[in-house]
Image (cartoon, rainbow, N blue to C red):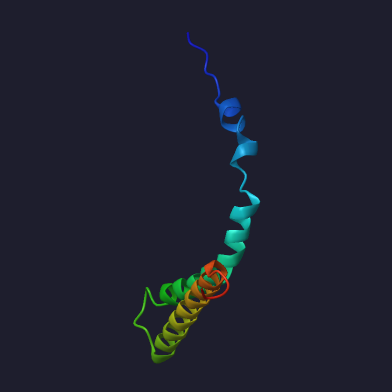
Length: 89
């Protein structure tokens, strides 16, 4: 009879290496407005899954879509401004 062994040691042996780095946490923090705007957009879509969207639902979806787009544009503008080196040659 073969004994059943767990893989707990193999799974948790590298747990310290699986933690996100400070750079990854900073990237998540920078992208958080986009993530939250996308969650709001998904929430607006989910509310209309089981029924025909009303005019109020359509407005909510349009508003959420605009906020998500604005958040993405703001993130891209911040990223572009951070990568541009100073001064023209």
